[in-house]
Image 1 (cartoon, helix red, strand yellow):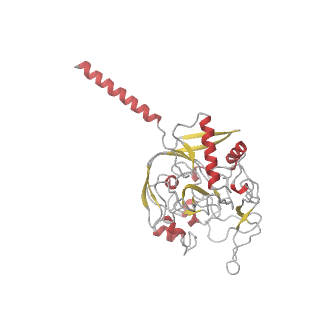
Image 2 (cartoon, helix red, strand yellow):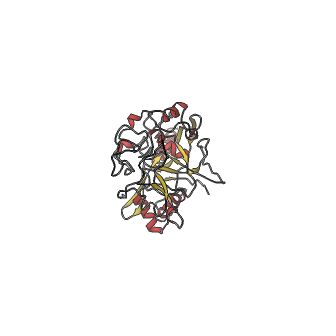
Image 3 (cartoon, one colour):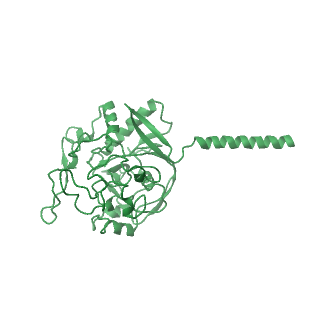
Length: 359
């Protein structure tokens, strides 16, 4: 009897050690993986555990976004795209998200390795870029807009009017360009033996993106740090008190009441620890729009991947360096003109997780 008890104790202890060992093998929140792209260039992803969150925004948040502080244009349908009110959703499977948006230097490695031409670089291609001759909206006379379709411009030259840096987020890339990068990265890492079975690099789904953006918060706050705009100082890049290149003017319309250091795009993770949310992800609000795997549904985002077969319009998320504060919230979502559309305010962030098909 004594021997039997000892044997049972030993068995339970062994099972406990095995369970602890299995648990230790599972990734924990914030665990980092690094994809090596060659030449000392790498791409980091952080593990985001499964969990629940509230997608969308409340009527009160929409009212703030279109009010004096938020500065978004009132009277449009834009805020309705966030849904009538926050909806509880779940991300059932853990995944890894790019710690930053994909950079110029990282995208260059892909293009050099594959001789890839983006949609903007192909014959007949174009991309939306800032017109440096633009002086203002001229709202009381002939309305003019700062972004125009341009040929001969691309991620290699987004017409910024200042030197392009490898640590800037890549822009002027389309949904199809972002997917091509992910397919190459999957193949590259698989051939190197660094990619676990059953996983692939891809664009995040809309639910994965908003869950990751909120950084583990259970409420539906406007930003990942909360709903107070002033608490965003030193955290993100949006329209703020910064002069445009070679001018003594800032972006018109509403802006954050501080300098974020850049009138245009900022380097990724420029704001350091203060610019990273609860999951350790940098620049989830502001910076550049991030193109998502889902197709756009004007009624609101979905928990599962949403695919449209006729005239698909990819979703973009997060706002950009030109946007007013009300357009750079966690819930903000727009539909691009199409899968091949690109813009010098648009980039992407990669996800590493189970395959999700949008073909």
